[in-house]
Length: 424
RNA sequence: GGAAGGGUGGCUGAGUGGUCUAAAGUAUCUGACUCGAAAUCAGACGUGGGGGCAACCUCACCGUGGGUUCGAAUCCCACCCCUUCCGCCA
Image (cartoon, rainbow, N blue to C red; front, side):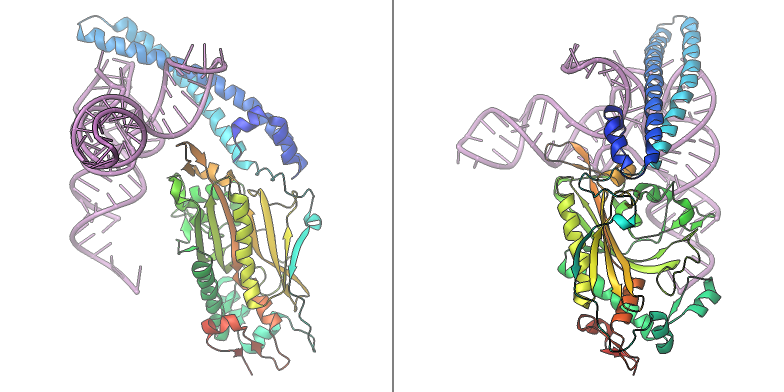
């Protein structure tokens, strides 16, 4: 959520920064400005009336104590009460409309965010490793997985429908080994606290991190209990500190959480994604940080590096791109995507998206900290996948496939997997 | 799911219709005393909004949302959460 004061005091700055995303936002900013003026006028009048009511009510109290007739004042206060109700309705309506508009406006891209309109304009920041060379034609993970019995899409469809799968045997074990590998890496070497959160959350959490109200059609919802299945661990983990004021020594907060993620992917069915690449349910280890504004950009760099370590340890070729202003996610001010090479796909797969949200999420969830001067300020929040599992699984299986049909397990994963190879 | 009790500032806790401007204690901070500390004394000490160049003024907030009333922390209704017991259950 943007600061209404910033919009009020510097609307042109807000408009120009939002224009870096898309040209659609200028009229919304104008509507917001008008609404803000009307809202404050109504609010001021209401408060004057309330002050008058408080004063007269106190007089009535004292008058009654002294045995005076107070019926005239009572009638007057009754009239004031009616006007308070009337104006209060206007003020409340303007207030809730203003909040709705603010919740629907994306974050301002950071000044350092590269300008651009689409994914085509995303600059590549660095590349690690090289594309592996095969003496044979590398197969797609679905082919390898079927031959080795690692997962079963037909069983997934039978139980839950399309875009669900069942991992089994060595496939299920590999998935579990990867989860343990990732959690161990981030908690013992990178200093994150491990969190295992609920997978069902209140709507307020999704508002806090930005999925609601705008992207409600992308999350699963249990109507009977009004709970939502999390689309990412970012939601429960960042919201651990919703409505809190953190003490000076508490920052930065660093959390790592493994959870399954649930996404309806409404509107993207049948978009040509095969196998494990786009699923309604997938596993992910998420990294979440809560920091001061001064340190959030440095923390983004180290968060991204922590995610990259995963691919380095597994010996997987990847590149890091930075999202341009037009491709930036709704709440993000600056984002790096990490894309791993998948030989069977002949392309890169996004396995991590590392973002600095600035104070955008913190405002939505009223997450603050007390600075050295004792002032309450909004925190900065960050998160990034460390990493998504299904696509990591794809890259791993396709990169380490052997001509005889087996899969070599990279050194770093062997203690967790308990063998050096699958098949043959 | 049923029954009972409860939800007030960082914490403990008083307040059952009108100087509540929410007592008191405790914690914290500042100052005094002290060589220093402890103890003691004094002061400060919630969050958000509106108005004002400012000093400052003002409104709202006692789990949440409604209602009654001239006036609600206080009375009424609904809901949420916590504790204990019962039921069900991995």
